[in-house]
Image (cartoon, rainbow, N blue to C red):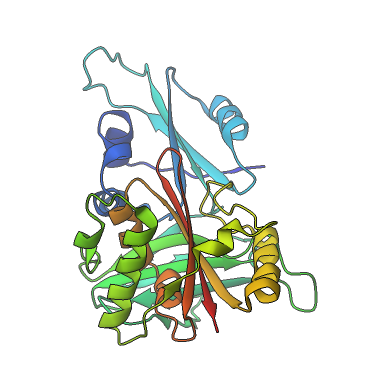
Length: 318
């Protein structure tokens, strides 16, 4: 059963129904969501050529939901667009989080029960690796996290692993991305290296090593030949931002046995351009930490264009 979340936002309805939300660069898209009070890191929007009530919206949501969908919201489209009549169109949103992130002043609260075995909140600024934010207790049973006043981004990740049992194949889910202070810069460091790139993998490796150099980390070497080894799964086959732990375990075993590397982790995002992908990598604490991991010496990059660009980056240590 999908949870219903009510979003009374004129801005988001206008962007989805009338604007160019789906083609705008990632920084502008994120700001639009943030200004509308929506902090979900993964959200899918649809429009329908009819007025939706809750039963009809739920039916549409269930038919379009993936296995990771936990909640939905809907509303009427504005009527400013020529040819639209009142209540002729509606919008529908699907979320991976069952509840919303609520921001009051500098306090972050996540109300309601979740299936998470752990909720992790981390923060990054303009440079450097992330730091964890500790949960504080208050009169409510849920408590809160105090967001930094400095410019940056805080993220909320839902974990599914259970101690002393089989790890979840789903992996950690990035639920919310929340600006702090004035938020992150609209450009990632060295973003110019990704403009008009003819070779996505080579350009992205150059970008990774440039941001690592800024942070005084050794450069990574590419191991593209690993993608051609028999039995190596295509990690871009799943075009969502969610980790495929089953395939990752297969890659880890092959890397250890065939080329003598130990995998340290995977980064993946879905973005329309390389520059947008870099912005997402840089402004997510866990993604940035993996990019700057001092243990890593090599990287395997898999990319696939399918309604945007899916980039999977695997970092290995010697």
